[in-house]
Image (tube, rainbow, N blue to C red; front, side, top):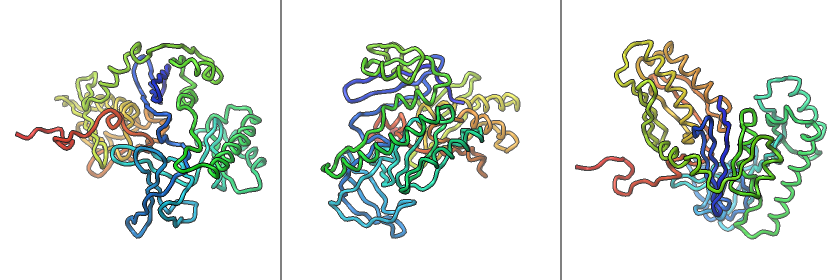
Length: 389
């Protein structure tokens, strides 16, 4: 289970970074630009190009004011297919942020997230977080939402935080989120594309909610945030002019960019990000005994889960553990991985063991990886990392 005791927020100009620590170790890091196309932002975009995709499907490149045009598919689950032309305007939401050479991915089905609920104006059903295990609480929340659904078609997702909230606060948030969406619609009528219609809240507050059970301290370098944080967090709130330097964040980030991670037992983990997937190899370093090998793999599983979150690895992740890849030896290792990744905000899922003996994980992509954030492909070697003789 992912835990954190300290969150550091540091802003410099329009850029800000969030560092999540547990027992002094960096376990999550995020960089965002207040003017960037962040996941969840809603824009009035202008179509710049209509493109033909595989299987006779259609897509559009859309200018939302970001560095690169974003992509929107004409086909979207739950919505009618759109047939638009270059120059037309459309209200869109960022589903995936830009990464590497690709621009952001957009959807038309806007969703507005609150503390307790997610409002789906284009939906038609009520969904409740599977993390709420109390069935009575699930039934009460679902019933309360249904009684307050407006006559028009709309959908709702009940978030985990709603389970411990006053039901009146949850119902009040329904009105708040409806008003947010109505404000988006009003802005869209008078805005000139490309235009930002709605920016999601500072990611700091989402992290505070996510780690509320273990969080003890929040450190900020922005006096304007101190009071706002105090409204949602009862623990220690500290101001620091340069928290990253004070806590050695840069050194920890530098280490997180290295391809090799050493394990206490003497083994090593090698991580390589490719276009198709992330490859992870566990090196036993001459450990041969079965018992020692099992311990090494369990130790590696804990560290791999940590590195997935820290480096923000996503998509298909393929792991080659040390020694025999038979299921009887890998079952406990996969259990450790699942346990360590429980609660991941990007829904990492251990798929299982492939016929080739590799453990496979799927993780939803929301943000660029650390490597993509802080490096560029070498123009000389083309990213191979090798030198020609």
